[in-house]
Image 1 (tube, one colour):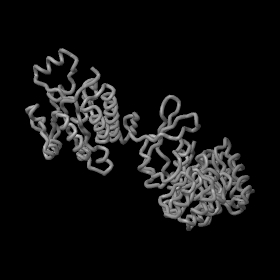
Image 2 (tube, helix red, strand yellow; image 1 turned 90 degrees about the horizontal axis):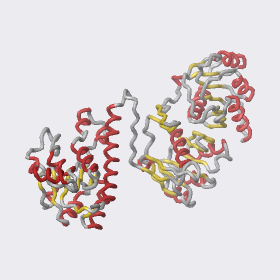
Image 3 (cartoon, one colour; image 1 turned 180 degrees about the horizontal axis):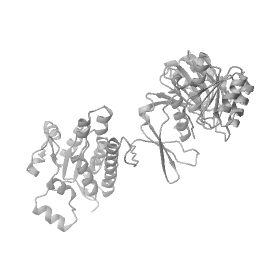
Image 4 (cartoon, one colour; image 1 turned 45 degrees about the vertical axis):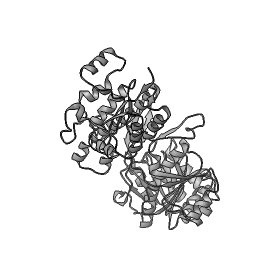
Length: 508
């Protein structure tokens, strides 16, 4: 029969919070309780009768608690098939009780790793009995209900209340699905811990948090974000996020992290920065960033690494934008910005802590290390007779940070701590440069004295020649072309300075 009455339950959990109401519900329904160790003591303190597992197994908890429930009378009680005559006969012969409900959770392995536990502490948090109980009960979902996490207590409580201790096969199958979700995620975490050096070429990813998005890249596509959004952001205002919002938010947050000690403002459009500036105040940084492209900023994703004050909010409120990200907001500033109900406002609470990137491609998944290298003064090798000035070096490093986060092929033009223009995603680096020059001029920027950054080397001297004629005075690039010398010679002949970093920053 699909409908089953819960008459007995095995309860053995690490976390006791939220457990008391469940225990009382089961007790009121006349369910016989079995338990172990700390959970047994917890139930007894509630004044509720509980049978120790040891009374079934005739074995105490041994090896420091490593073995408590691993016994035929426990696993037999879970796994025997209630509709199978042979199983019923054997259960009777060996005095194996029926266990209809299993409530168990797992040792905090991931939490111990995250907290920096010692190797011994981490290994001891690899659950054996718990994971076995979960798998056994989930396998026998035709007869047994498995609750494998305290997060599922509300589901169980509602079910007990509604059906007075009975469950349908659909109920049990859903709990079993949750159980296998939990057990597979747990095993994934353990495998990834043991395989930190990637010696075994296998990919295991488990994400339990999911956010349904407004839609995918286009309205006819569905979109879901798998990950703990709440760990990084509080959404303070606005409509549901879309796929494109999140891709742009990722680009904005990744770029703003390049300026940990400065006041930076970023404007992103279709994953590329159309405005970036560093200044002494958030308002000044925003105005300089907006100045770089007053057209593309419309409908953009904005981000800063400092608190938004009222003065800045008053300027921002003049612009239509999709998303604003900041670590904090003055109360008056937030009230003003929330005046437009669809405007998405995100309070950023944490940075990006992943070191890998993955994307689906062909019939598989492409994985790489994140590009965590930021070009610094120590990376610079002056290859021309002219050396860049201190101001030019600062501008070159600023431009290099932007080039790293801009779609290839890319050229970035900057002056001081302000983006003037960039050429993005072109099939030719010359096209990217010409695009950047034309764009800078269209917004009234004088390129005389500006610097240029390239995400990859110049195969020919044409780019430095075009840049020179536009007024560029200094160049930063990775180097590495067999024709590097041709570009160096042109710079020497025309008084430009150029530095190599040795690091290419393609972004496809």
